[in-house]
Each structure stands twice: as C-alpha cells, then as structure tokens.
Amino acid sequence: MTDLLLKVFLPSSLAIIMLGMGMSLTIHDFTRVFRQPKAIIIGLFNQIFILPIIAFLLAILFHLDTTMAVGLIVLASCPGGPTSNIIAQVCDGNLALSVTLTAVGSFTSVISTQLVTSFALTYFNTHTGTTIELPVLDTMFQIMMITMLPICIGMFIHAYKTNFALRMLKPMKIASTIIFILIFIGIVATNFNTIGQALKKVGIVTLLLNISIIGSGFLLAKIFNLGSKNAISIGVDGSIQNATLGIVIATSILNNIEMAIPTAAYTIWMYTTGGILMWYFGKKKQKRIPSTK
Image 1 (tube, rainbow, N blue to C red):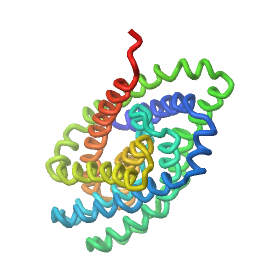
Image 2 (image 1 turned 30 degrees about the horizontal axis):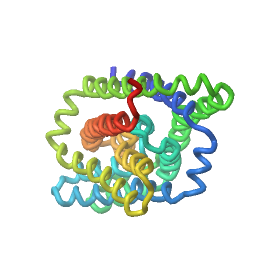
Image 3 (image 1 turned 90 degrees about the vertical axis):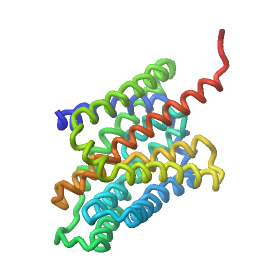
Image 4 (image 1 turned 180 degrees about the horizontal axis):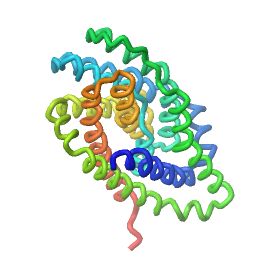
C-alpha cells in the first residue's frame, strides 16, 4: 500500500496539480523572476545552506546519537519537494518562484546533498565505507515528468485557451487542497507505527527544524525586502523536503533503515505546518477579497 501511495498515487496527483498550476502561469512570470534573481538566490541559500546548518546545530544541541544525527542531516541536505508548489499556490505565494526554487534546488542538490551527507558521516564518526552516488538521471527525469512537463502543458493551455484556463483556477486550487489532505492522511495511515516511533525519538528535533527553516525563510525575505508573496514561497520551499530521496539515501545508499527515522518524523511536521500555512494565508486572502453580496 505504501509503494502504491508513494510511487503511483502521489506522483500522478502532483502531476495533475502541476498541470493546473501551469494554467495560472505565463512565460512573463518566470522572466520576471529571473530578471530579479535576488529572491531565487535567497531561497536557494535558505534551502542549501541554512537548513543543513540548523540541522547540525540541533543534532549537537539535543545530543542525538550518531544514527539519528546523520539521518537528520541527510534529510536537511535533500532538495525541496514538489508538494511545496501546491502549498505556495494555495497560500497565494509567488508560484513561479516556488517552481523555480524546486527545479533549480533539485539540480544543485546533486552536488550539495553528497557534500553535506559526506561531511555528516565524517563529523559524527560514521565509517560506512560507502561512496554516495545519487540517482542523478532518475531524479532529474522524475522532477521533469512530475513538475516541469505538466506545468509547460498548463502554460500552453493558458496561452491558447485562456478563458478555459482562468475558469479552471478555482477548481484546481480546491483540488490541490483536497489532494494535499488525502496525501497527508494516506502517509499517516500507511506508516502509522513507523511514524509513531520516529516522533518518540526525534519528534521535537524535527519539529524545531521545520519551524526554524520556515521562520528563516520569512526573516530573510523581510531583511531583503522581497515582499510577502516571495516570503511565502521561500519559507514553504525551505520547509518541504524531498522525503522520498531522503529515505532512498538512508536505506539504499547508506544501508541503514534507522537513519530514515528523522525523515519519517519530519514528513508529518512538514505536512502539518504546510496545512496550517494553507489555512492561515487562505483565510487572509479571503478577507482581502470584498464580498459580492
């Protein structure tokens, strides 16, 4: 059931949602982002540098054992997950920035994830004798098929069937929220025992990591005057990790199932805080829209 959820339902659902997101985007949205790259640089800095640093500090502060510490760093070194795009859209963030951060962050993680994980193994005196080689081509292909291709198709529809694309914006946002909730329920239901054990071991640490990186994203955006929409995208993208890749690194590459425990715990928190952000910013957006009655 877990494999069906992670390998079939989740990717398919995300691809459909990305198609809907593409219908709300134009090429101009992306050119505007790249013409003012400060938001991209800050977002990537938050994801690639700040997140692993916070994870290291928490591992040391809470005196985590070697396995849990390395597992936490592995999680923090992973790129952002495409679910962040769903949350950013519902929160009324800068969707083009969110998509860009997910795509660029995934490609740069081919190097950064290996460097951070290798350093963690050395620092915490874990000698596995394993060479870390990420599934680069598979990861890139997966990202392209789940995110970029559906978004491009959606943008094509927006360009040539504009009225249809605009009519679909509200239904697709509703569908995004429903699918997000179903994914959350499905992950909890199929991994209930594992998640329970994970929360007992590193629940507080992973919660602090999640809240800290969201706060860091919003703080950096405020310091550099990036605006609320960019702040939402940077905060959300920093907090939503590619949990699947984290589990693959821990179990398949490092051959240590226990190292996947922090990822399991963090998954619950990132979907929980993501849901709270969707509710909070969705509510704020409704207050800004004048009543038609």
